[in-house]
Amino acid sequence: MTTPLQVTTARLRTPVTGTDHARGPVDAPVTIVEYGDFQCPFCGAAHRNLTELLRQRGELVRLVYRHFPIANVHPYAESAAEATEAAGRRGRFWELHDWLYEHQDQLDPVHLSLGVEQLGLPPDEVSAEVDQRVHADRVRQDFVGGIRSGVNASPTLFVNDDRYDGGYDLADLLAAVDAAANP
Image (cartoon, rainbow, N blue to C red; front, top):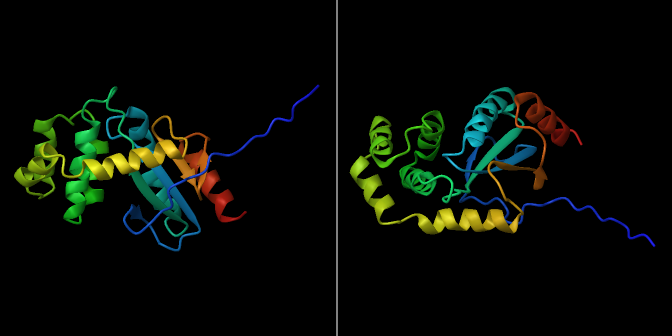
């Protein structure tokens, strides 16, 4: 007796909305949703390639970032995520996002505060919001949405709502975007 094997593609369960952090045209034919952890070295490598992908395919791609801090492995990931939300309240999410990935070895509270200050954000206010866990619910909502969508590691990408299980090098990402833009 045989049993048919049903293969299902993991799908994004939490739709992209106006409250998501997004780069690129709203009407882009390809939306990439990244679930990331600011302290994860694999996310750091993917960040460099996603940045270049946006440079090369900016008219085709909208990139959405969602938090997936793996706190038991990366002790500063949650506070870094909450700091980006504090920066986002001030219209500067992406600036701190980029700084964190470019300085992954400096995510402890002292260096994070210096980075916030370098970007011209009020370090005392951002630190107070992180200490008071003002943005913890937002980070948790992203994390839970990731779990519901089958995210079990960082980074995890979804391309037009389908989980992307290919490589994170630039050539693979370009091929995935080109295929999704021209189905």
